[in-house]
Amino acid sequence: MSIYDQLIVTDNNGTILKSIGTGNSLFHTVKSANVGGSIKDVEQDLFSTSLAEEVMGKNEKRSFMQRSWQGPEMLMTAYPIETGAWVWAYKEIKDSYPDTSMRQSGPLLESKKPSFPFVIRSKPMLDVLHKMQMVCDVSATVLLLGESGVGKEIAARAIHNMGNRSDGPFIPVNCGAIPENLIESELFGYVEGAFTSARKDGAKGKFTLAHKGILFLDEVGELPLNVQVKLLRVLQERVVTPIGSTTSHPVDIQVIAATNKSLEKMVKKGEFREDLYYRLHVVPIHLPPLRNRVDEIPHLVQFFLQKYNTLYNRNVAFTPDAIDLLCIYQWPGNVRELENTVERLVITSGIPEVDVALVKEVLPFGPKPTSLPVIDFLMPLQEAVELVEEQLINMAMEQYKSLKLAAKVLEVSQPTMSRKYKKLRNKIEEARFSPVNKRAILEEQINQRLRSVAAVTAAIIPAEEVISLQKNMNRQTSYSQKLKQKLTMIQEKEGVIEWVFIFIMTEDERLIHLVADKGFVIEPGEEYIGPPEMVNVAYQAFNGKSGVTPIYEDRYGEWKTSFAPIIDDDGNIVAIVGCDYSKAYFNSEMQRLRKQLNIHV
Image 1 (cartoon, rainbow, N blue to C red):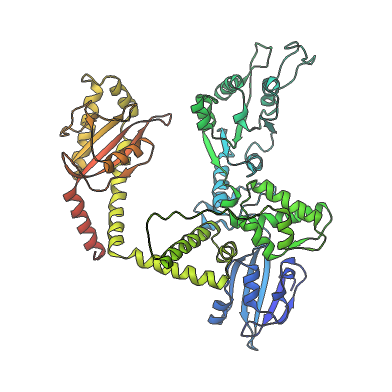
Image 2 (tube, rainbow, N blue to C red):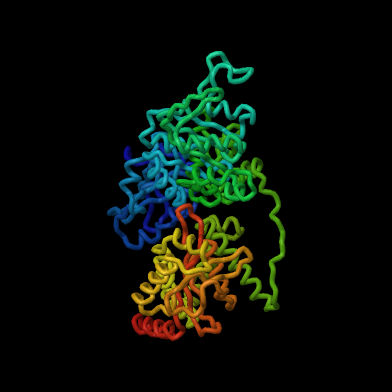
């Protein structure tokens, strides 16, 4: 028993005959784990997956991981014994990280983890950890993005802790908490006599204090414009000039900035310097809100529960229903709000178990907002009910990825939810293989290839040549000849492209032909006027999204066109490249794919 936290013995129907274990409080929160209960009920109450029935059906020993709703992840081993009974053995896995075998870059994840607790149990946060590991040993500037309370400072400390600057200082600065008249001296320091209240020996700034380490600029969007200028210089030149001094000194630091604001929008409003934005935006890492990582909530609850039970000398546990309720709450304050809630419940709970009633006392669930669904055409009432039901089931499963949680938020039983979701999945599968969808699948296969051709073509077009040609559109230049030759070569090499061309867009959103292969029918500088289905995809490309049009007709024929943006070194879209394919080519490709895949449409 010493290697397991809990042993349960059942008969061959799953009824519990014996339950042994005192080392794990998880099993003490549910009555179904007692003698006379059912192993199937235990799984439903404690874990996100139910495997007992499948295991007993195969009648052989099996080990697998079970993710609990209350927090810990359990290694479960089940095996039959000679009497016909079953033994179910559970061992808690205490690592703060998930199994990293789900990623191709496992060795990197295994080799670099923060030495302090940093709970990561969801795919989105595993992606965040992977990016953090890639930047922790370089000096590149990192910009942490995300809502208030998602854990940006914890992430910054983790980068410091994992990287080669871990022996150096970690200096946090809350840019929004320092008065505007003091922030410059706080960041850059000052010398004696720099201003009236300056200290006799002056003072070192945060940049100097962070030498050989990391400077964390939280709420960087709150910096005044005049300070942004000096910050930009430090980031570019890695030298600091204290206030009142004419002498600069070098600093060896990595800067990690964080904000819950959209710096891009602030740049457009003139509230944040564009050059500083690009200097900070070297490696952006977006921390997702807690509502988008629901599967992490039970583990965070368990982590905070252990923390505050120890701090306040308590022994409080959460019931599975209470954990479920915490999982379906939206958490506008994110991890910070969750931690505060757990701390409050640990302090104020007068009983050893926090149940649903206690959670509802501290969280503002309140009445659900009422809004009528928008239906803009008449349909049979039953069909409308089924349509709304399907949408709600899809929304719940997409957000919570759990039948149990989806059932709770929709206030139906788990068997009902399971039945309805299975029916919906079957309906979706049938629809996928209808003649219309078979054709859509084939067309998307062709579109993927056409999109790739446009993207590769855009990548090999030098942006500086396009910019130079824009400045001299009214006369033949070496740039126009070089680009025409390059586009002609691409068109001839591919063999199936009718035309390859480059469009620019005017301020009033007109599409203008800049240059094309030698056979193109529109003159340079001429405006292209075409149908909406073509123009809309072109506009999307100017917004950074490569795309492929449906079949459309203009005055030159019937076409399918793929577009991709041409981007300069600063990330600006300077033009788009388009590749035209004839309708006849597209139809022949559809026919070829149908035969190749033996699909009858």
